[in-house]
Length: 149
Image 1 (cartoon, rainbow, N blue to C red):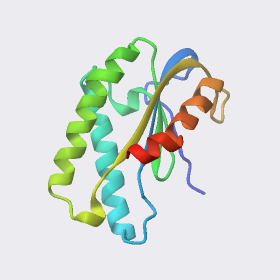
Image 2 (cartoon, rainbow, N blue to C red):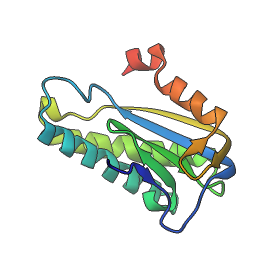
Image 3 (spheres, helix red, strand yellow):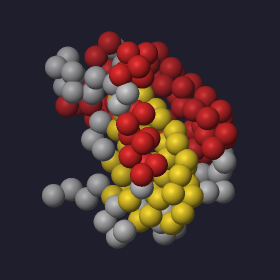
Image 4 (cartoon, rainbow, N blue to C red):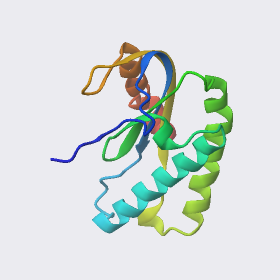
């Protein structure tokens, strides 16, 4: 079994207020995508996230994150303010996706749904316990967001 928990390399574990950045690749399981294309799409998503977080002085490994197969859940340490996520990080992520898509064929096009939220979170040794995180995932799966993408 694959371990999907990717806690911060420096040992940061959520315990209190933090920001949540949840990302989902739209149409990841579409039949037009082969597994090799899915690998490229996931790589582009992770590289885009890492470059985007770099704009606020973080790397993905500085955050607690869990792979979700067709997306990723990232918990951001509290010293990074949510307004920086909503502006700097998301703008950089949008630019990264556009740059990737310029060279990608139709089956490999990357479209992301992203939700950002702030709230209490606690790492319980196996994962994250957080009502606010549950809400962030509900935002990500909301029909209006899916239609907009």
